[in-house]
Amino acid sequence: MIPAVILLPIVSGAILLILRDRILDYKKICIYTGSILTVWLAAVLYTIFTGQESVTLLSLNDELKLGFAMDDTGRIFALVMAVVWTLAGFYSFEYMKHEDSVKRFFGFYLMVPGALMGLCFAGNLFTYYAFYEFMTLLSFPLVLHNGSRQALMAALKYLFYSFAGAYMVLFGLYFVYRYSSDPTCAFSYGGIIDINSAPGTVIRLSLMLMILGFSVKAGMFPMHGWLLTAHPVAPSPASAVLSGIIVKAGVLGIIRVIFYVFGSDYYAGCGIRTVCLILSLITVFMGSMLAYREKVLKKRLAYSTVSQISYILFGLFMTDPVSYKGAILHVIAHACIKCVLFLCAGSIIYITGSTRVDELRGIGKKMPVMMWCFTIASLGLIGIPPLGGFTSKWFLCIGALKAGVPVFGILGPAILLVSALLTAGYLLPISINAFLPGDKFETDALTAEVTGSAGSKYHAYTVAKEPSLMMLIPMIILTVLSALIGMFPEVML
Image (cartoon, rainbow, N blue to C red; front, side, top):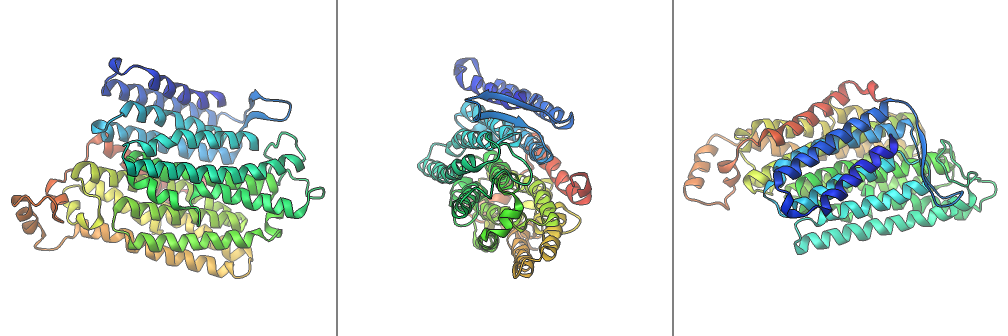
């Protein structure tokens, strides 16, 4: 089944791209895409829950193989990616109705999850690297979609950053291949590097470059710039999966490198951990502070992603079992929460055309269900119990305190708490102003509508209405999932 969940969306997306426009209309494209996503999700769930499987798809020689295997880490990432990607896809059927080049969008939207499953079930480092590059190429058109100069520059920036990171990984891969105890570089918990025969400086440099390379996709400082330009210009369903899912490819790569290639013991003892922890905490604080200052809604959420992904990286870099639990739980919670927030932002843009947070005053009166989804997801991201973000951050802080790493055992939780306060500062005012605009607001808003001041701060309120069920239901499901993760974390742990 592993080759099936990889090849089904890729082949289906390619077929959609090559079909002639004259035999397709928007309704047929949506029916085709929805059917493939539904069948694919069912196949992924069946694959995850029916036991382990190991298969070789292609052998370039005796050592370089596209090989797949299944472990619990891959299962968790595959489950999260499949559910979130499918729900965002159904949301996009309404959102993309008035967009151009919808066949191209849905064609590539179908193909990307095939590459993501290749990452989740990769059995060796060569396979992971091949699908990592493939995923970058397939997701590039999602950023480029509207074809504007701004979108072109953002897409090129995304491509440049991603390739630069991938080449860092490739440099390390050469030396892993040279000094690996397994010529196929198959993932093995505890590491596969023969430390005794490998030159220390080269191995440390390889490890550092591979972590930095994968952290480009994860948006860690100073390689975070592509997120801030790609998110605002991409269609909101693409922004949702870029923020909730694509960045997790970098996280999974770092997990494989630290725990399955070099080994956490070597990583913790070679001096690299300090650099990684410093970079992750800088990113946590910097992302939150910049989000607090940002007035454009989607860009604020992009800065938030930069910060929140480094929560996960901080937990991984500590290499403590409890902080590792927190990191994995935050992978799940963040995927659901951030997808909800971007889909809510997309609904606001789609219905009202408003892109700035200061234009959303009173909008909760016209879009209450959507804004409640936004509010609950925001509370989860802040870390309010019993929502998903609280549980994951609890494990992250407790793990940091237990790990016994000098300075960072105290500094890490302190910065995470400050970042949580900043998260409240840039998300809660949106909900407060949406639901509690003030006594005289409605009269002033109606006056603004009568005078036709479409550019006024009340414009969003005057034209707002609840989004359609096709957009609303995925947001509600993801909101409920984000809450259940916090209430029942043991299901995943």
